[in-house]
Each structure stands twice: as structure tokens, then as C-alpha cells.
Image (cartoon, rainbow, N blue to C red; front, side, top):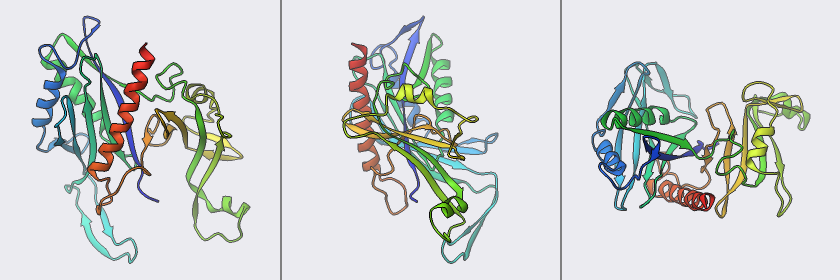
Length: 303
């Protein structure tokens, strides 16, 4: 199965004495801060406590108040063997000081004459450094501007009944268990070969109908324990809903083992390069489309 590619979208706002401030004007503007922040974080930053490293690479800023690029996110602190997936031939023994670095797409867009902006962050196979980056941004911004508070609000929180997309119609709801024992397959097939299987239960609405809205569906899920649903005697640690965002139906995580709530799955919408990662052009195009749909929804929501 192809590595899952997800996008999380956040609303950015700055408040001063309880009042929301414009992001693209005033002294200083948040756009100026983001530009300076990116340019000052292009060399590797080490977090020895978490055994993580990261740095930023700006790829595109040709549109006003728009910044796109990569977070080069690294993990280290453990040993492992690198072997060929087919032949099992040993290639390399990773040392604890070796850093595995993956490129994760980021985007900031600050619409003109608005008191809010957008931040988008990619995840790869459930891995991301979103909290690390957002915490650093918030700390450095508020240290530099003592009277201001910077906040990030997830625009697709699955547990929000009154959120921006709470009323979005759900076209399909899917329960997923990726490592189900093969005896589940025995119920339907004789002598299945794999030791484990991916097992799904899918509920789909009829044409021009829905399963209800996203907010109510998220609230009504009966969890056996934290982030686990039991159905038909099987525990499912993941749930995904397909909801309408703008003019497209998109897969959104409801809950999951890797904090997938609110993550938009774009795995099937991007083009992969030879390295297995999304090409910059394809993920930028897809993220722009999502942010644009959210912006239009937000403007209508505020009227």
C-alpha cells in the first residue's frame, strides 16, 4: 500500500488586548515575521531531548503573503538495519547518530485585508512535526511581540459539533483495521495466504443522500475505549469520513492511532516522484485547492 499522505489545515490569528489583528498590515505584520522566520531557519536545528532535527526550505513565495516549501524533518537516536525489501540483502546498519530526514510540505497563506490566515502541514505515514513547528513559531512570535498572542486553530476538528465543517454532509464512513489477524479472512476465504489483512467496514449513502453531517456523526460514534470502535466483534483503531469540502468530496480522519483526526487524505490526488514523496508541484496544487475551498466556506460562514 502506498504511503499515506495527509494535510492538516489551521487558521492563524493574532490577538492584542482581546482584539484580532490584521495579518498583512500594521507594524509589524505577521507576513513579515513568517518571511524572516523561514529565512532564519534554513540550517539544521537540533532538539536533543526529543531526538529530532529540522530546518526549512522556501520553494515559492512569488505570490503576495504566500510562502511554500519543505520542513526537512529528521529523527535519530536508535539503531536499525536497512535491507532490500525483496532480497532481504543487508545494505547498512544505521547508527544512533544517523538522522533519517524526510521532506514535509508546508504552506502559509495570508489573504489581504483579513484578520486570519492559513497554515498547511503535510504528514507522511502518520509522521509530522506540526506541534514542534507551531510551538516554536508561537514562542518566538510572542517573545518578539510581547503584546500579541498567536494562535493556530485546526479547521477540521472531528470532535467539534459547531465547527466550520460540522454541517458538511458525510457521503461515506469507513472503519479500518490495518493489521487484522488472518482468521478474519477465514470467514470469507479458505486458506488465505497473508498472516494479517487490512479489514474495513464501509457505510455509504445512496446517491444524492448522506449519512448525516460531519459534526453529528463524529459526536455519535460509540467508542469502546479511547479511539477504538468495536463492530461485529472486531476492534477498529481508525475511522475515515468522506465529506464535501467546496466542490469535492475528500477523505478526513475521524480518529486514528497517529492523531489522524482532522487530517485530509490526499494520497490519491498527488503525483509521487522517484523518491516516493509527493512532487512539490502536485502537493502545492492540491493544498492550494483545499485552502481556497476552506477560505470560500469561511467567508460564507461568517456572513
